[in-house]
Amino acid sequence: MTAMTLPTDTPRRRSRWPLFLMPILLLIAAAAWSAFWFYAASQAEVKADAWRAQEAKSGRSYDCAKQSIGGFPFRLEVRCEGARVTLTSQTAGAAQPVTINLGEILAVAQVYDPKLLIAEFHAPAVVSESQNAPAMQVNWKTARASVVGLPAIPQRASIVFDDVAIDRTNNSVQVPVARAKHVELHGRLAEGSTQKDPVIESVLRIESGSVQEVHPLLARPFAADIHAKLSGLKDLMPKPWPQRFRELQTNGGHVEIVQSRIQQDDLIAVAVGTLALNAQGRIDGELQMTVAGIERVIPALGIEKMLEQGVPQAALDRVAPGVKSQDVTNLLGALDKAIPGLGKVVKQNANLGVAAGINALGKEAVLEGKPARTFPLRFADGTVYLGPLKVGEVPPLF
Image (cartoon, rainbow, N blue to C red; front, side):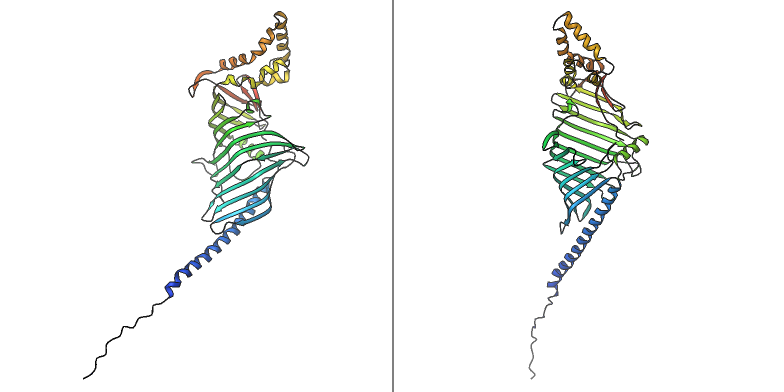
């Protein structure tokens, strides 16, 4: 009888290759991503150099005392320490280049979304025309900018400042020039516009802003919200601003104030209208304004102060062109002779008379539940008129 042999269960050796497959794939992916990041970083540096060269042709030069690229593995960070910007021929009649020195600029882009660029600027910035001229020092708490659409023509751009302070420095003495709690400027290509005929939409917002040495009305804190459209551009290539303004005038370009609101204490003003440039580079146009509380700012126009100082002709021309200084002075003197003190009463009530005159020009209206008047704000060859009063002048833009 033959003995039966029973089969034995011999365990099959399993391959260990699957255990190493995932780590190997991860290692390959990490190596490939690293290679891609370093390639993207090198391309970012090449594109930055090309952009700087293009800007230099337009009179805007950008230099860094030290530049570095980091952000591995998911971001590209270009850090520019000791940043220096030189602007040549960017304003009408500019005799010398303007230099801007900043502490640091940090530009960040995600590797997977390189068309979005975010930048941070570190204060302070010093703006000067020459070594001997007074400089402007700009400080801020935070400053950020973003651009969408790079490296082609940007589709959208924004810049935001918090706690901005601009001072003029001369022999270590700082004189306040402007202040703002918050400033933001947004711009984008309007829907339906093309690169050959672009229309730019922009929004400017200012909170608790004030500007010295421009006009008394701007010295007190105000808030502004302005929405405008710029048309007449033929391209978006970098150019010096005077050249850009001249092209706008030649092409019949204009700025449409779609909506604007300015508030200062009890004064509220809204305006819409269109402004353009004439052949001399000065602003022409008209804004239709509705104002509540205009009597609050009449003293800032300087009527009473001019009367107290004897009404110099140059000062009178600012607010009432065509009226002779000698005539007003003689009239006030005659009133004092006839009834002592009457001339003083007329001076003290001059602002009320001006307010009544402005109110008589417009139409009654209601603005945000308050009594208001509607009247035009005219720009004629750069001169700004509030009704018949000359309230300011804008220099030529080219």
